Image (tube, rainbow, N blue to C red; front, side, top):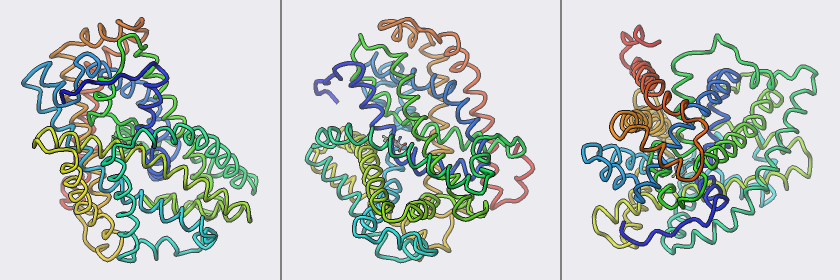
Amino acid sequence: MNEKRSNFTGKIGFVLAAAGSAVGLGNIWRFPYLAAKYGGGIFLLVYLVLAVTLGFALMTAEIAIGRKTGLSAIGAFKKLNKKYAFVGLLAAVVPAIILPYYSVIGGWVTKYLFAFVSGNGIEAAADGYFGAFISSTWEPIGWFMMFIGLTALVVLFGVEKGIEKVSKFMMPVLVVLTVAIAAYSVYLDGADGNFEGLKYYLIPDFSHFSATTVLAAMGQLFYSMSLAMGIMITYGSYMKKDVNLESSVTNIEIFDTGIAFFAGLMIIPAVFAVSGSDADVAKGPTLMFAVLPNVFKSMGTVGQFVGAAFFILVLFAALTSSISLMETVVSIISDKFNLNRKKSCLVVFIGAVLVGLPSTLGYGPWAGVTIIGMQFLDFFDFISNNVLMPIVAFFTCVFVGFVIKPKTVIEEVKISSNFRREKLFVFVIKYAAPVCIVLILISSVLDALSNVIPALKMFSI
Ligand code: PFF
C-alpha cells in the first residue's frame, strides 16, 4: 500500500474509529453467549483480568508497530524483520475466516430487524420461532446475502465515511439503549426476589474454572478488540505522532469492555427471567436471538418499538465491523494479486459467500454434518478465535519481547506521552502472555480434539 496515508485528526477521531471497528457483534452477540456458556461470573472475571493485562499489552504493541512503520500488518512485520513477515501473513488470514460467518450472524440481525419493523416482533418471541428460521434452507441464506451484499456495496463504492458518520451518532444511542434494556432485564430477573441471573453473571463460581474458560475469554478478547489480526496495526499506521497512544488504548478498552459488560447484563439475567431456569444458558450462538424477543414482548406494545430500535442499532454496529473486515481482506487481495479495487471486491464477495454458505446451512439442512464435533459456524469461529489468533498473539509477543525488543514499542509510546504502565507492559509481553498462551492453546486444542480422540482427554488441564 503506497498511497498517501491520511491521518486521523486527533485522539477523539482515532479512538472513535478504532472503537467503530472494535464494537460490533463480538460485544453484543458473542460476549453474552460465551459468558453464559462458560460459567457466568468466572468468565467475566477472567475476561476483565485479561483485558487489563494481555489486551492492554497487545493493543499497545500493535498500534505502536503500526504508527512506527506507517504500514499495515504484512508490510509492518516485514519492515521490522524479514524473518517475521509470516506473522503478518498469518494475521491477514484471520479476517478472511471471520468475514463470512460474521455476515451470517449479521443476516440473523437483519431478519430480526425486519420482523420488528413489520410488526411481527412479538411473534419472534414464540417458542421455536428462531429454530424454524435457521433450520429452513433459503431464508437464512437470503438474509446472509443481503447483509454481505450491503457490506460489499459500501466497500465497492467507498462510502464508508457516510456509514461512519451515521454510526458515530448511532453508537452512543446503542450504548444508552443497551444500558436501559440491561436495567429492565435485571428488573425482570428480580421479580421473584432472588436475582438468580444477576448472581450467575456477577459472582464467580471457581468450580467452573478451566483452561477452556481462559482460552474462550482470550479468544473473545482478541475478537472483540480486533486484536491479533492486523487490524490495530493498520489503525495505528494512521495515527498521528502527537496523539497520546497509551490513553487511547485505555479509552478503546473501556469503551469496548463496557459495551460487552452491559450486553451480558441485558441477556443473561433475562435468560433466567424468561425461561425460569438455566436450561437455556448454554444455547450458544443463538442465545441473543432466542432471549431478547421475549424481553421486548414482556414490555407490551412499547416492546415492538424498542426491539426495532435495538436491532437497527446493532445492525449498524455490525455493518461498521463487517465493512472494516471486508476492507482489510480487499486491500490484501488487491495488493497481493495486483487487482483493482472493483475486481478484488468481487473476488472477496464471491469467496465470502461460498465460505459463508456452509455456516448458514450448518444450522439448517446440514445440521448433521460436523467437524471435530462442531457445526460449521462454530468451527470457523473456533479456528479463528481459539487457534489462529492465539498463535498470532504468541508470535507478536515473542517478536516484540525478544526480536525488536520492548524498547521499540516503549520509545514509540513515549513520543506522545509518559508510559505509565511500562513495567506491566514489559512483563506481560515478554513472559506472562507467551507462556500462558502456549499452555492454554495446547490444552484446549487437545480438548477439542478429544471429541474425536477420547484418549487425548487426559492431557487437558
Ligand atoms: N471487533 C469486532 C466485534 O467485536 O464485533 C469484530 C471485528 C471487526 C474484528 C472488524 C475484526 C475487524 F476487522
